[in-house]
Image 1: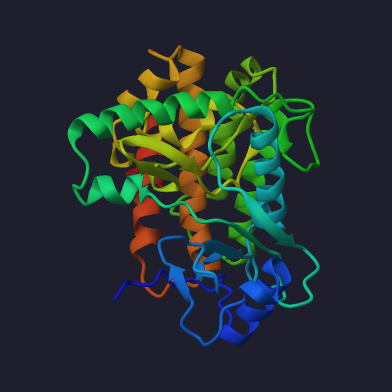
Image 2: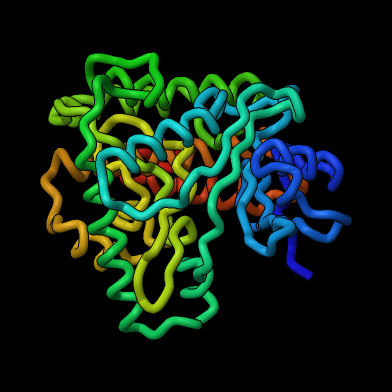
Length: 336
């Protein structure tokens, strides 16, 4: 049996409700009978996702946003609507492969949340297949480079402002990114999360290094969550990019594929960077990249409280990465 990723944001539904959702999307003729037609896709942490078998034998994927009464991070409010907006941008402005959206329902009539159906991608999860040793070294290298090239194409989309895709926007990247960190710190303070550092110390690190953000003058579409586990591979090729709900307009260096530059535990970024077409970073670029990893580490620590985790593994991991980053910024963890 597959292990289910537990989180209080998972908005699981009964077979009866799922059938009602399917009927609205595909019609009664394609709505399955019985209860054995939905399999939960278990490796995500936020939305619940089901692999659905329709009555005609075709398959689809259903994603459902968290329940309306579950607290989420500020950046996660109405995040499914951001994903739909992001997918529309990607379809309209790039050739990057993403699943087709079959039906989106934002009415919250059948369930207390937004949801949408998309085409099922018959392929392996790149990250999971790599971790399981099912892919050759040559395929892993080539697909890692392809992922970098696809990410660069995503970043070719130019936005109207910095910050959230659907607004509110900021005129500068310094202001937008500063608000992103501040929102997360306020989220942590709201539920009394101990991040291992004074929140004001995080703010001080940002203030001391914020001038590096001023090099970013053009808002670019940033996928933000393009890890290998959010891509699908078939016959050695990336055939789909998944999970676009965290996209923003900002600095392409913020992309997940670059995280290993600062935090080796996230993997060697060499292949991704080669495919992307970027080599050695300048000093301001290194500072920005480190700030983005700092932001990620703070999120990892804070969000555990919002997910309702029953163990401390993710929290402890986030704390370790945050300590490593603060040391890179010249802060001594022993002197806290």
